[in-house]
Image (tube, rainbow, N blue to C red):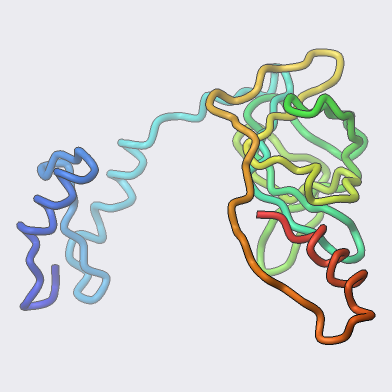
Length: 186
């Protein structure tokens, strides 16, 4: 918006056709000049729907990312869709029906900050004691075993589709390569 060669009208037209956005609903904002910045926060608050998650609803958690940590095993990024999550809580996976106990809960900042609980709508890093990254299915829904909740609509088990020819530099390294590949999951 603040650049002389910016094609604002053309960009709005592209956004309208690609994302079905009404050009009159857009804001012209420039962090460089400060144009429109004062309208950004009030517009976000006005247009963002209120959180539908409630603490008194059944526990329902969405797993949306996971990685393997050498010391703690699989760590999961999860969003609380209902209820509250705290260490010691028993969870069951809607996809695999496996049960887990929450070992720790933390918020992701520059470093992980341990917390006592995550409430409705909050996102945090959760350690469930999973030993293999293959146990963490992205998009899986977790709930309390006494009141299992249905999976979030649209969940499908991911299928890895990458093909590569990998070989260790030494013949004795095949075991280490296999262990490393078992921890690598797309």
